Image 1 (cartoon, one colour):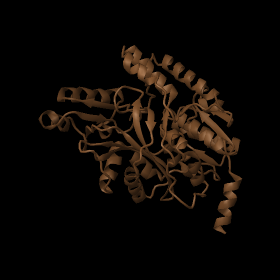
Image 2: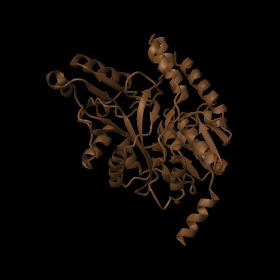
Image 3: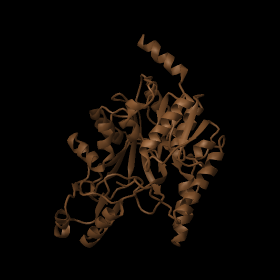
Image 4: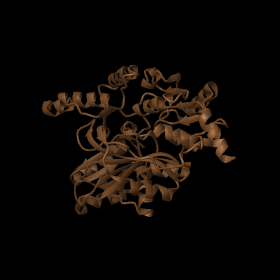
Length: 407
């Protein structure tokens, strides 16, 4: 009987509502589901949201900014779910925490494939995430929580440099500083505390600097069982350096790293989507840097490699996961984020680093795109327009921070 119910649920393919429609990760979900004939509705705070202009979007709902007005945002999404008839809610960003917390207040027939809020809350906190890694044997960098200026002053003579300062919550390298001496540590630490009005219990953490190149492992789980996994190697970033938002990635043949990530999440009994970011230490051992309990920026790479994360996430929501698994990449590919590459190019030109800027223009064979499909060309144009308008509104900042994003 259970098998019959699952098959019926699958072939009925209930409508979905995808949030954070301005972002390429949500656009990937809209395309993934829309190509399969699933009705997809989109919501976002920006009227220029790229997913709104996809041929697969059935409707668009203007929403408040969830960082600024979380309660009003939740209410607006609930109204949109009732109006559109969507039965599957796929949060595109950190609004996943809002829906995890208030899951029981969603319309009764709506499913959101998310972990329990207590687990989500600990994972979202960079200190809590490292604590979980230590508890369950996942390699992690040496990390210290600072709760007083006296503790910070203790690093005057004893710290090995460089060190990394991180706010407890943030994304895309926002709220992250690399420092090379005590005076810089003190100044940057106090600057972060003042800039984001951080109370002592939410002061930034200090972490050992890891010199390796960032790698990621993306997964989808259905009630404690991994149904899809893929590893990414980051080749280029929107901002200079080896951290932040990657604009060019490739699929590495790294099943060992996938095994480390899956072993950790198995112990947590995970449900839904997640991406684990690792950085190798000086001996080459990958150490867990953070976990994004939501869709991640390089998700399109796995889709191009044959692992359709959004559709599998949707199947987890309707309790129809594949019997076999986990799904793994079927081919080696690269994938680039075109608007991100354009931003990186503009910043390098502004810095008069023309040689590095010109390398961005180099074409690659077997390379997909996060934000462009020949069969659906309009979203790329509106993504670029949206970024341009936001950059102008925020005084030319290529990496703007929304109030409430760093905390």
